[in-house]
Image (tube, rainbow, N blue to C red; front, side, top):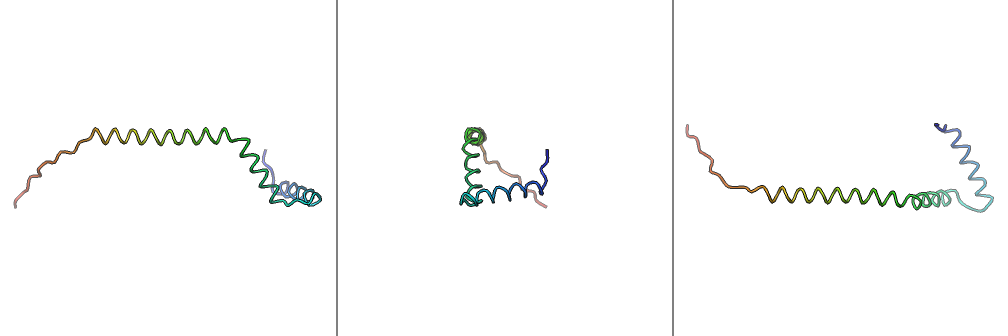
Length: 82
């Protein structure tokens, strides 16, 4: 379900008025809501970060293996004369 901008504005205005009655600022309340949502999803955030760092470590290991396997031997290059 898509929420219209009109509905968002109505809800925001109502929340702002209710907060004002309780002597709270909307931005402070909104920040608190964001923090709460982050805390509630902390496990998911940590899983994602762990997966990202594991992929990065695997990439580094594979790169090291490739670098160890490839040995560069100098070769002579024939010079062509005109």
